[in-house]
Length: 312
Length: 306
Image (cartoon, rainbow over all chains, first blue to last red):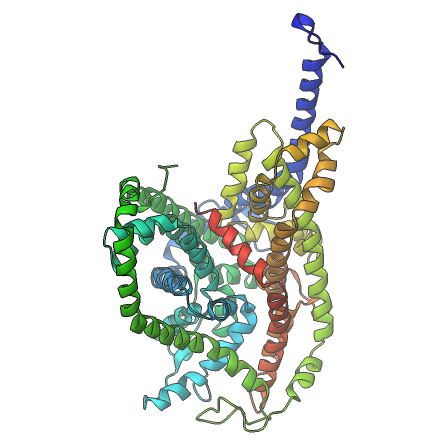
């Protein structure tokens, strides 16, 4: 076929193009439409609804009534809510840094050229895949004060038996310790980050005479800061609302409400006492706390997160 | 910061010297290496200890689990706890219910998330990047804030105590994280494929179904496994929406079994551990059957951090 020269470019060419573009535009919207509907119906809608519900008096069996600021007034003086926030904060502030450091250390070890490293990786990773209900029951049995493995091990060291989850001063540390068992997912994310560090950086540092520690401090650590940041943000958002299954199955929030996490308290208000309005007010408070913490982290990240190839 | 190019020039000059040094370094590394082995093995042992304890308890004769100090290896191995535990509750029914929920979610997620991921990766439309940003931002949205209204909505629809609240949402987007995974993978496929098909007159839908999806085995497997494990393990949502035991999932059934124990008398911990082991086993089998997809999925999660 011969190509027309000069001004003879057929008129149909751009028109066909624009028709194709229009089709693409239409398809694009159509293909994301299920997600968009889902976003409106299952995310944005419920979010706004719960904001409105925070101002309603709504015990599910009776029709809702406007409550004004009643829920908020109740919330600020509610000793259980305050206690649950304390417990949750305790959980977040101890568990998140602990898990991150442990996961990073595990990833560093798993990144070594050891023989049988794949088997080690499986052993470190697998516990994180155990269903939460099953692992909660298992740990409940391990920390059983009478017959549990934990006290059995203490006996070997001549340490008297502990009450563990039945002792309000030990219950929170026990839950945090338990969580160490499932850092596998975070570890693998770190591992991927470590393996993404170009080898030539390490080589260059070695050439300059950097030892193991210096290479970790000045090459590895800066290069994984984006991954640390990612895990920190996700970890804190998660930690503020995690622990439901564990506390629900293992302690029911006890003893003396020492493991009453905010998420458990919200569940109780919503699904055991059917105070839908109050539960919404509680969940929006927790939500706002999480948003503030996340925003602070993004602000702070500018000072310590290093992005290769400039700030994005 | 940019010392790499400088040092690279010096590489050849120093290469011989470095070779020497690395040899001597290796020699000094041997104790360090051995120490690392010891630590790594010790930690692995600690991590596996709960699992050993779980299985050993499940194999103990009734009452043998209630001894102190505890025996890590049962003196007499008995398999009786397994049939006893699994028939004490309708676990077969719970298994079927769970599998149905898992399967429906799988279909919903794979279809709707890959469709949206394809649009975000390949099709040009207005507000695409803004909408994708919105989609990503929902990944960070705490679920707690939508929990109560979602429950009320499904209650108004009369869907409580059915599988609908646990499965229908999967068909509407299938989760921001899964969309993200699909998009990232699709971006790596050569664009010429789409163009060639388009020249041949294929529609976007056909390109997605006939060309993109058949090339996306790894990401499909990754997303599939992630979702199977997630819905197999899920506790809170079934707890909220399912009320009668005939609708219970494995997780709820295990909880009900725990509640039926009362004060954990003679032989009951052994039964509970047998039931727990039974719930873990399918995940374990899946893990060893498809190990690389487990790891790959999380590796792709890390991409979000870059």
